[in-house]
View 1 (tube, rainbow, N blue to C red):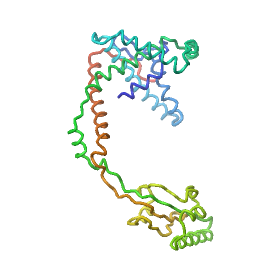
View 2 (view 1 turned 120 degrees about the vertical axis):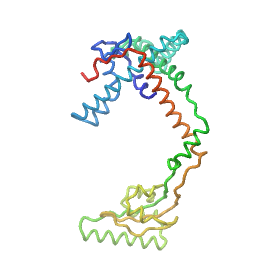
View 3 (view 1 turned 90 degrees about the horizontal axis):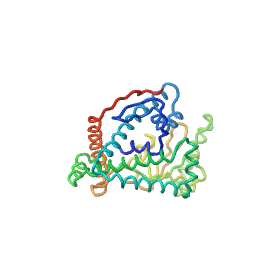
View 4 (view 1 turned 180 degrees about the horizontal axis):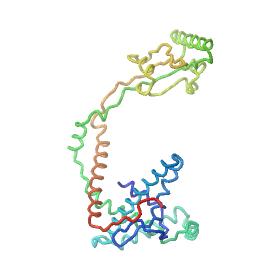
Length: 319
């Protein structure tokens, strides 16, 4: 909800009318406004996709941005019509925000700001309009949505009781590992296995695991003594996870063949799977419930604004 509105706060409008994308009551949204906002996401899309897939991604983003701009325009119009809001105070806040922008980004040099805007074919009025819309959206969202969100302690506890599995912590182990890479042919492969078995015998005889890892392991973590840190067994290769079953701290696996490589693992510590207690996750649950309720209230608010407005989409496709 709020993130969708925030996407457009970093992009000033040029004011160039190059076709109407939509009518929103007495105002219009131009195709240029939508395309300018689209550039925020177009770059990453062009790096990930090509051809028809790219075109579809851009088309979907265009339509979503157009709808968000319509919603944004409705919120600003609702503010303008509201006799209860302090419009003069909002103008003072806008001017303060602009001055803050000049201080933070241009060391207080207004001329530098104007020169930077000119290079982008924008004006100071574009900046004021952008900042004004951002402040209005923040104010109206706070008043119409955030102030209406009420989550009781009972709701939080009910959510925990209804799905305790969501707050489970899986089993994890702190591991050290030695990996002996396989050979290029059968003869070398046998030699590498014999090396792994010799290392294993040394470990059973009391040799230091970290020292042998630094000396023999082909794993990138060899330089840290083969320290793999905390690992969830479910994230390991099944054959490795199975070898760790019921292995107590200090326990050592045998030599485990995985494809052409040979592994030796040592369990440093082990933590059993558990369910996080309510007090530990209370804040997390409340935050999630607040997000859900905020979205519900926001959607209802925007729906009411839309039903009262005249909205006509002229161009919902990329030009």
